[in-house]
Image 1 (spheres, helix red, strand yellow):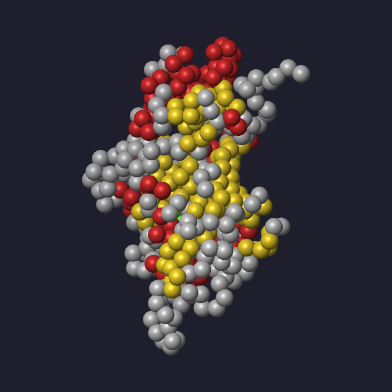
Image 2 (cartoon, rainbow, N blue to C red; image 1 turned 120 degrees about the horizontal axis):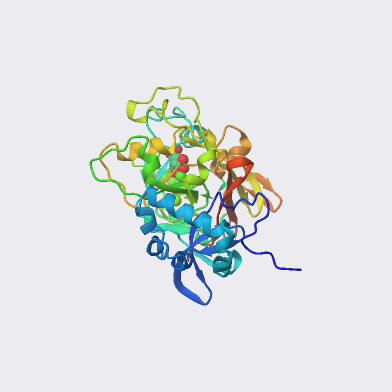
Length: 433
Ligand SMILES: O=C(O)/C=C/C(=O)CC(=O)CC(=O)O
Ligand SMILES: [Ca+2]
Ligand SMILES: [Mg+2]
């Protein structure tokens, strides 16, 4: 049987000419030579080689070892490069030149496609925020009084953003001893080292122990990658989203709930989240998601003018996310349910005069929908460990060593075609001894 050309895709392939996500790869014969690739079906185009062959004016940008130079070039260049890529991959006149530059995806090593500058994580799902509020702060209001007035967020740790597939080492940290039996069995190496004798009276102040986290969790999120930088002291309007955001990808904000719940007051998440954040290897260009734009939920509290999106282009994205633990689907969070949009988050990030750098990543926050099978983390799916999940391979409250978590997503594209968002995956390895 004749071998099908990598340029002939099956009908409706989610990585077809309307998608064209960017990544960075190496081949086994040149493991240190990072190249920009464009995913097309089950193959990857060596974009730098294609640009050189075509004598493209963008050959230097596509010949770089990360996406940052291309991302810094701005939207007119992004659009010109996307048109060139589509021509190279679909115009029969280029077939003989392009075919030899296509690598089977399975033969490549994929790397972090961008050099991450700053990393911010938001808290934009009303369902997640109110569930987390009820679980972490059962005696208070589910939402804090500021929540409907601004997209709440925190600055995370850019240096520990890892590419999909990287192992996640169970973190050590301070945590409170569980009031009763631990919600999930301790890994063999997890015997905690008491920092102090246990309190003898129930009114004694809490005293932490030190050891591997017993409540390791995932958070299904969507990340937005900044391309064009912005100057200091220049707040961006909502429309700035279109000019400054290069692309979108999946992100897993691994979270140690026991470390987090002890440390987060009063300044917010810190070491319970900074040990690792996984980013997908493929960045979907914003233009590939044009058909997925959708209106966000109705605002029941009018936002301040700089966040008011009533007259703006629809700021939501209809991304259908799926979360699998060890290959078993545990949730399908709908990104269209997010209350605060990425455009509002960008306007808020810069409203105080803060500048943007190429490679800044801002993540949506955990994506949870209203239904019990739409929740984006185990904290919610097991209600703080109270209601274990029953999976074919055993019950889970939080993650055990060896567990693998995979997020996938797709978005509606033009003419009923699906735009594949690739995946972000990671597996838990035992805490360092
Ligand atoms: O309610 C809290 O105190 C914190 C909840 C989170 O886990 C914060 C976070 O990472 C934001 C998010 O993913 O939505
Ligand atoms: Ca998060
Ligand atoms: Mg994290």
